Image (cartoon, rainbow, N blue to C red; front, side, top):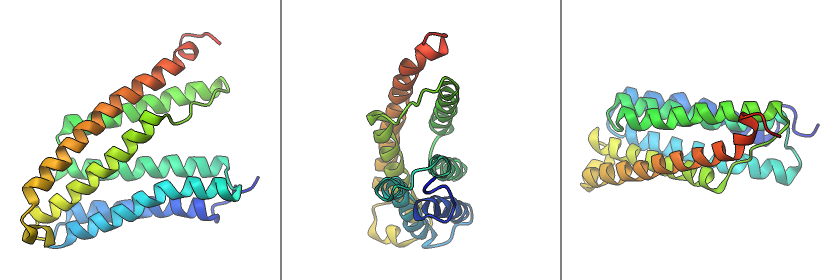
Length: 196
């Protein structure tokens, strides 16, 4: 099957996303002036690969089970890893991150049950909006963290505004998280209750 090896460009982009995650986490947990901005830049590169790998795989005919696994796994590793580090740095409240993580676990379980019934639950519009909003909120908070740690953003004097903007974008992300979860659960309900 085309694209079934790790060496294809889409799969390498997914692997790059996984490898960049601990770098962003380390920059959050071991802060230094300018580290927040560096974390923002690396996170942005990783987030961009999220939108590229699937498109490239489809354009090149390299869609494969390995590629789908790499894409989904890399997305979760990036978001979960950085969100947990953000809780540690008090950039986000625990309840907000827990809501996002629980949703991911529930939907992963629903998709697994659907797969056993040979049903594919594709990403829906709300789910894609949730992902984009979450990544945007996290990026803004990384800039806010740069301001908190005497980085270039502090000199611009917009740290509090970045913190507020990041928080409210993440509130929107949590709202979309819950709405998209309901959409998945509603679509999967016939399978979950044993109907065809």
